[in-house]
Image (cartoon, rainbow, N blue to C red; front, top):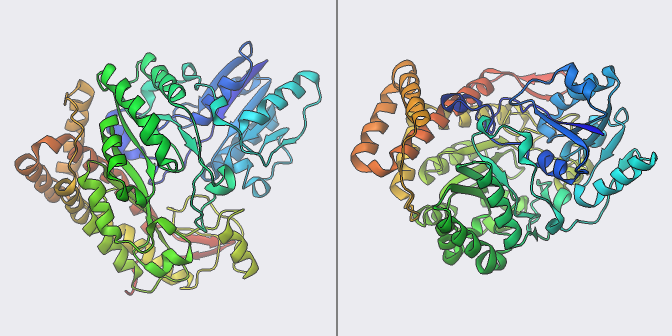
Length: 514
């Protein structure tokens, strides 16, 4: 059996890092971890190829070679996924679909023209499909309400990709989140109870990355890395600490967690000792009523600004997610979001418009209120949404554009870098070395940011401040500066476009009245 695994293209979003990756000559931020893991689950004697459309073109010859094309996609990749499916249909190659777009969003995607759909996690369902396929009686759709044991999950088949094309590698320790935010589909897809791998399994996956020659950043892609704090502190992190010391610290880890990380100094200390230097936290809103509305329990009744500072002081850079468009948002929310982001020193502040993913409590509530709109891109940072906001489309559109236009402008963006570097106290000591690739990237970025860009004066102020005040953080400072170039490119596109809400309705507005 010949299997072609295809990962659709991501749109140009804040998350793609497309414009920043050019400086370090990389094609994509992260590899398709799900497809690589699925490949490892398939029979060893089957031939396998993988095409990641974010790094490589897909040819008709590739499709014609395969007996089956496996397509896995996030909802934001649905347009590219549809193009892949249409090409396979035209060439007569059978298709197997999986991933979130074929799970919570499969009805909207239109799966009837796909031969087989795996619309839940693969560990238990894929062996059933393979067995049925070999018997000649494969079903159209495989689904389950049971959450599989992730201790069954094999090491991804890394040999299928060229690791040099990626900015970071990925690993997964757990699935699921103990919280129940109204807008989040994580619990719909992966459940409430975090399912975790053991220390031996995690070390085996780290060994696999080490053995293929990877040295650099590794993203733990968990829904909430700290969902099971006890196991992390007693088993997982101590094992990683030991492994990293034995291997002389080849990796720098980053992950996603909840705001209650700030309440556990032992956990933060262990994470930093293990090599974690960054954590993405869903802040969502500085407005308490909005947090209550969406049931963001770890953020309620706490000083979020102080929590962010505490995490930074303990050696973890905080990246943050922010949402606009809650029913409880006051008209002052746009200014309040900007103020919070600037004061917090959250440099990578991902601000999006609220969306209602299918299957979520928010989706069900808005459906009852007759406020849902057709469509939805799955990318909450493109300014679109799939429901009628209480503050009105025009107000939300103006406000969103104003926020992203403000926070990614050179002056406030570089100011946030300085705010972060004042608070950020990395305890993990890694030897600083400059490779030829990094030196080349520094030269190219200096030309673009320090000579060509309009905000060059603010760039040079950051360079001089860093060298004089925080010289040891210079590599981080310049990395964040380059990422800002990408964020500005995407923000400019969002600000300049007409925002799509539903059907043919568009809004083109420049700035809010706040």
